[in-house]
Image (cartoon, rainbow, N blue to C red):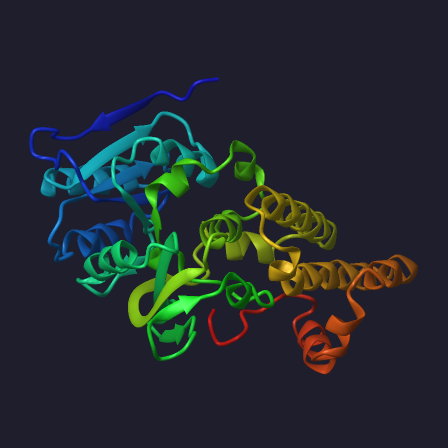
Length: 329
């Protein structure tokens, strides 16, 4: 079934050949969307860029805010209004097909950028470091009381970070609003990846398969924590059985993505073992001891031996919930 949409854009004022397309997926973000788009519009660049806002049939006044922003920034904003809700994955794929830029960047409607030179530096980096397909930075986690906590720390110096280092444990890999990818990579993502249980992990795995990612220690973005529409809130409210299904699906899609992009399984070994450990813990939590022991036996013994105390105490203390680790999340 098709989902009709309306495009509102002033094509006579928009750039004809933008180097970067910034995608803003927004749903029920009325209190936040203006701050997000204004932060994108402030970018100081030596090239042209465009902002694509995908308003996904919100129930609040997000659409009105989006219309006001398009009118305010007609030289930057292309607004797409969906007739029916597409969902996060559907909205992402819909907007990607409309991007014209050589590079792709994203900022969900409840996040925002705090560095007006973010785009300029990342385009310069990807122009120069041709062996990678992705760039990212550090960022802040922003809590409801206004507290900002810096995270995603891979060191104090700009450098190429290997995919194996990025995918350690279950920590947040990179702040999504900070990432930039080559457009050809994003546009060529296989259709089946849309069914993966969480998009960012698999997009990052695809984007880092060739040579890792370019990292800069600058704090360029704010990521709002625990918003009602966020993945983290939905994840925390799942039942044990739903979480078991989630982690089993994650294992299947990691292995499929590794095969597709020819990524050695060892790159994802620690994360795969963490997923399997989560499944075992959920079985124990359900008092299904034999099933839990069988799932635990599938975890690599060396992995269990390394940092076993830390992992077990973390699982017990969180009731099985994974927390951001490595100082990044």
